[in-house]
Length: 161
Image (cartoon, rainbow, N blue to C red; front, side, top):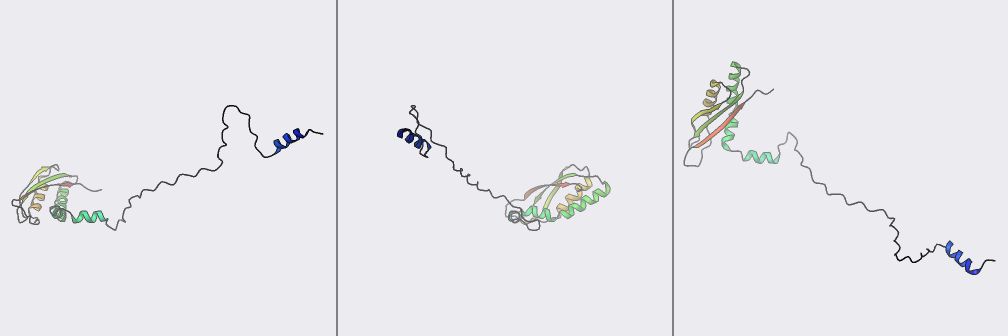
């Protein structure tokens, strides 16, 4: 028969009770946790700017249109006259393109005076004269100033493909 003390040791080694290691001067390492780490919270998404549909003007465009310089509005409204000058020049020379810079003074009433072409990279003096004549006929909104305003505008003339 087995000795009762051996039976007790055998019973202890087979039980689920953990075995205490001998003292080695170091503390035993705790077991690593088994639980799954939680994923970090998702980063907040930065909103991406969205373009408005093409047939619907953006709010920014509407604001810019409302703030448009009155003088530029007159130039934009009269571009058909400049296009007509350019079409006549292209009839003479189909490959013509370039820039005509026109400077003019405006009276307090908004009328153009002393208009002249100060630069012409097209090489066509008739085109420049036509543009200056067109500008001389424009009427700008009157200004609340004590002297005439001086304006300068570059008309860029190219053939769109």
